[in-house]
Length: 287
Image (cartoon, rainbow, N blue to C red; front, side, top):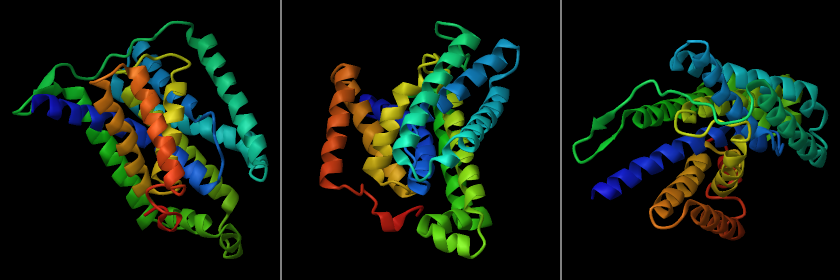
């Protein structure tokens, strides 16, 4: 029973991170149909933001606030300089974002050097949950991720910005006809997705190895999360992250992590073959 409870909480931790990273891809891939291969670098930017703030004597919580801003700034610059010229050239966008990902990795390496960077968690110790004890920081991570996802869902459903985004998703030409600035909507949405990825990087930084190449580890999984769940759907995002994160956590107790990763990705490929539109159909986007 204790092993099952620990596995469940470990799965929730991984699901939370994958959901936040995948949220940015859900927005860019589902809204703009852009395959952004530089998305993992936004995670790395968030993690290095926390490290840099702590290296200057600041707190983890200050770094947690700076990380989404750094991710949003990087996302806005990428969209403004490059992606807005490539929306009608998907292959060009793939090549451009792949090149940008390499540039960002090398830039982080030049700025911060080689080797893993330490990030100190804001709290130590464990919490007594009755049946088991569990690291307190991981519980905080799960809570912040759940709150963020709920806030994003409310933002998309209950605000004018969310209405504009949903209108552009349904019909870009009609959105332009009624006066919605789709260029601005794309730029803001892309920067917002990058900000959430930066937040994910900040949250995972005390648990992961903070390296310039760390984003690569999350890129493939987050793409499978979005594709398996259903591109452009918050509900699908949760379903996809639950499948990938939960299955990975269960297998990690039985076999080596590398083999577990291979089996999870194989299962995801089979699911995509059986359900090409994911768990949630296209008609339910941002539901």
